[in-house]
Amino acid sequence: MSRPSLLIAGGGTGGHVFPAVAVAEALGALADVDVVFCGTERGLEARVVPARGWRLEFLAVEPIKGGGPRRAVWGALAAARATLHAVSLVRRLQPRAALSVGGYASGPATLAAALLGVPVAILEPNSVPGLTNRLLAPVARRAYLAWDEAAWAFRGAAIRPFGTPLRSGFVAREYAARDTPRLLVMGGSQGASFLNECLPAVIGAVHASAARPLDVVHQTGPGRDAAVRDAYARAGIDGVTVLPFIEDVAEAIADADLVVARAGAGTLAEITAVGRPSLLVPFPYAADDHQAKNAEALEHAGAAVCVRQDRATPERLAAEVERLMYDRPRRVAMAAAAASRGRPNAAHQVACDLLALASIPSRTHDVRGVNGVRRLRAPERSSAGRAG
Image 1 (cartoon, rainbow, N blue to C red):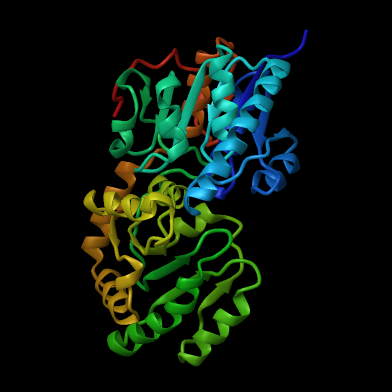
Image 2: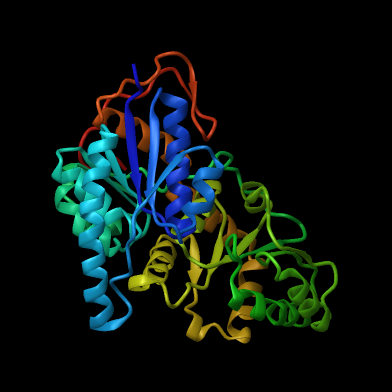
């Protein structure tokens, strides 16, 4: 007998792809299922998903936003064609449920599933729901949210406030301030040009003003480390650890006293899952300005300081870094506030609930979720409403 299948639709960027991968890993740990992804050939999923052994189906989808009326019309026509293709795909796969993770391919594939009577769930990791997920909200029987601020877009009975699914290793770690504070600059897996260009001057100004030791680890993105290392040298800063990529991000965050980063949903989920204070400079061109809204929501919770990029001069950032790095009680309070927003078991919770939605039984023997949490059995179907 063939195994039941589940469809995960969407992708494009790491913010969509890696939460989807975390859910797929959790599903595989919980049940005998075939997880099939649906995305585009140009998205990150084209590289990440097959490399991990999952099947990936492609749809030809074009952007709708950001190019004026002509692009909107062309994108809408492409979406209509992709939906027809997706209908035949869903009929062939016969998934027991479909999960939309956002991105161009998620709309046609998830809409096709809904039209054919397949239960639909939405994963929304941002404080501002994306266009695709807003359009799909009326047909969604589940809305897995990371932020209370996103709840307005979805039916109350569908909402499950589980957080953003993460890879294994992201667990709450008690914060103990170092004698020599450590600053982690984290621009995501591809790095952040603005942080790479700005932070060497910022750290130079902090050193000149405070005249106290400061440990710095700076992750630059592939191929960018040499230029950043040279920039620190020109600023007269020795001993900075400059890396193109950090293999164990969870450990790097746990070892930090302050994280300087963008404000993508995945990055903030990682910081809050571990529980560390952060100084956030949101990417100003994110769709619907969602990074700024993510950062401002975390700032409102007392876990972060948000400085928009148009105000993030080296002088302003240096003042914020110095203020935070040498104020231990404030960092301790911010770390606790961050941890209170963390959801390290989100992948496991989403997977359990998705299996229940699909009427697929979980294994009843001892299961260890992808975040290392021991479960004797999957929980029963979650109750509706705000679970805290």
